[in-house]
Length: 292
Image 1: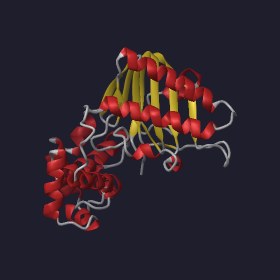
Image 2: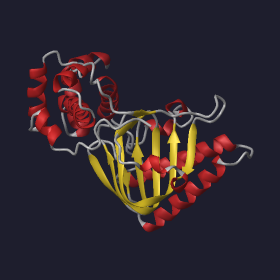
Image 3: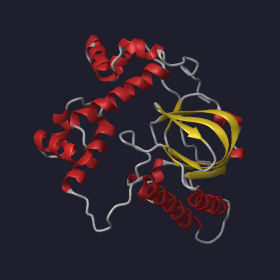
Image 4: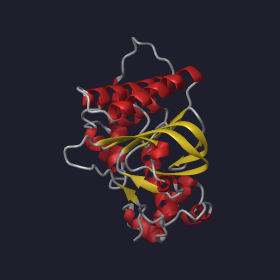
């Protein structure tokens, strides 16, 4: 069985802060090879110069000066660069989530309805230039309050990015019960979609009826609970079809489909083409990319 290569966060020592802040131009060229891989950590890439494209799952974003790109744990991504990048990258281990609680609140690292990139206007870009420079300086220092200062800068960067990514809202607006339930549902789907393919399992986990869950998802997100779940399953299927050479029957089993032929019908209904046709529509040069 082939797997999409997984890159782990490797802390240099147990007592070292489980994050890394670096300048893009200081990273080895191997970091920018166009090889699809998953990662087990959060990444923010602030591009100050350079050109090309960045692919996160099946979304391709232009790489241009003043763009901020996001990749979350489990997502598949790679770069296709026509000009080397300069800027900053922040790598954050999931074990740092408790200190950096805003990670769970922003809409950048989610597979479902997540934002993969923002391209701020000039004035905002200048702010991000200064913020990432300050973050990098703080990371390299041994000054008093280093850790809380790093946390504060990361929080500010993510909050500022989230405000730019979402439309302005009335500060008096409160989160509705439907929105709260929708958020909890999408979190469960992200975690368990491969194991559980039925909406009623999620309704039971959330202690609500299927009808109430479906109505709430439709009200909050404008789609159905079943559509969200199927979208997540199909995304994982596409990842395996494009980034491994596993037979379709093996992929069906990995996704917990007992009958490969049913998986084929399911995929065609959701993606409009068969798994084999979908696989041939994408370049094969990134399949079976060796891990570093």
